[in-house]
Amino acid sequence: MGNPLQMNRDRPLFIVVAALVASAVAGLSAQSLPAAQSKSAIIEKVIVKVNGEILTQSELEREQIEALQRQQNAKIVDPKTLSTDAGLSKALQEITPQLLVEAVDLLLIVQYGRELGVKFTEDRFKQALENIKKENKMDDKQFALAIKDANLTLDQLRQNFERTYIKQTVERQEIMKNMSLTEEETRQYYKAHPDEFMKPPTVTLREILVTVPTETVGGQQTFSAAKDEEAKEKIITIRARAMKGEDFATLVTEASEAPTKATGGIIGPMLTDDLSPAVGAAIGKLKPGEVTDPIRLGNGYRIFKLESRTAAEVEAFDKLREQIAQRIYDSRLGTETEKFLLKLRTQALIEWKDDAYKKMFEQAQAQKAKSGL
Image (tube, rainbow, N blue to C red):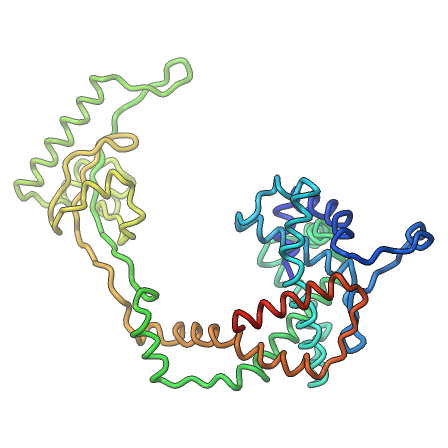
């Protein structure tokens, strides 16, 4: 289930999607209501019963809204597309089959967890709420507004938390117990995927800055060509002294006007990719101890000394042991979970109340089987 606080950050999209989903979602169903029934108020529509527990239309709509928001946040879908009936209907057609599969599977796992005696206590719920408020620096009023903006009630939020907690407990107790991992498997994965564990190249620099004085003219910051030339000549003189062997750190103390003066002009270590193009080009071919030509950068002229450089390299296995194990577990979890769910589905009584949604569900299941998941 989505985080209501994330919804709050994208409130304009939420309002658009929430308003349109309810009207467009009816078009997904081939089952029309009798005329007399359509004129009366419908409290809730049941889509499917899973061992007697229901998935309702409003629950599916919340899942659809959250899925569309995730796609928008990931720039998979253009918000403008969702503002049209045709665009929204197409988006719903694409996401709904998988959402139905996930919803049914979640009900099956939660039911299994309850049979095991897994409980989500009131104390756990209260602690979860406090954690959310603390992590997002929200008081009770702000939290209440976030929940309202997310179109959720506390009962619905509790249900979301409960289902997630039970699902994670079942995965840990019933699925991951079958996922043993040896030291040799971990090392083999490390050797087979070196690109996943590369330590990026870094550089450590020292800088000296000579600023170009500015003045305000007509509300705009400006500088004279004479002042610019004066600063340039000064940095050229400083570089010449460095090239003759004077200690660069001493020159920093004497002449630099950069904030790094207090630390001897040190910058880094920092990732090479994080350098500005101008600095990256200037130090590209330098060897440690060498100094760049003057660069007009920002508020003045700078020179940089390359203190050290580290090349890209694979990090040591011992530092990555737990990370590698987690990646292997993650890659196996999907397969093991599907085996577990297949057993639950075989034993379950799944009663569809909407033929169109049933076809979507079966379509997604067939696609999953075809892909080998």
